Length: 314
Ligand code: CP
Ligand code: NVA
Image (cartoon, rainbow, N blue to C red; front, side):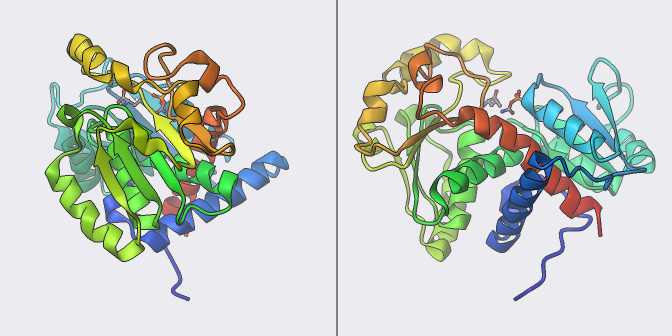
């Protein structure tokens, strides 16, 4: 077996990680979760520092990074755009250079993927993408861990994403499923289809893993799904699109009728959260028996801790 080392690596998009590396992170996350539930917290980040840069709001991602790093003895520092220069008075490259001298790693949540790339290039330390307009890789890791916990494996399972097919969460799910051999169906109006460039990359990845990746406007395609997944209809930074999105997406609400259309009693509901109950999902579904959204939220912390352990500890 090939030994895997992710030491020193950034996580900007899961496109940069091999299926074996992603599986390694999921396995480590599972281990870390078991340890945490047994109260076996160690001090593996002792003496280390993490800069947490936020251009957009966050509950789960911020709390996951901050608590996962802090409980293992590390020192996380929260910095919003109100606190530091981030391409403001000084160039982004210069900020990155300085952060790289003071921190062992950087978490970035914001708008442009390019910002995360520049931070990684000029800081010289691992950079973790905590969500950009294009990708949400740490979310996808938690989602697949949740799927694995419920079904024992992710390979060959059917994950159906219903809603805004071009957003960061849909895109990252498409990548991870194509890499791990999980069948993935995006059910979205054609106006919100994922872009052709990404779909081109996905096609060759899926060929290797055996995943069947579909994009369709047809809600009937939820039939046979092991999990239905949705996300907000209006992502952060797209508030001016509200009217258009409500018009396009209202037929795509995940409600009990849609859950029943899977024709599988054991099918589960997933949501990255935050949720707008009454828009993309009804309260009875997200608060109901089939919902694993709360396990999924907890899994953000374990997967994020796994990513930091793998990249920061030799
Ligand atoms: N799912 C997620 O990223 O949540 P936050 O926006 O609260 O971090
Ligand atoms: N697509 C959402 C995800 C939030 C975690 C957004 O970008 O706002």
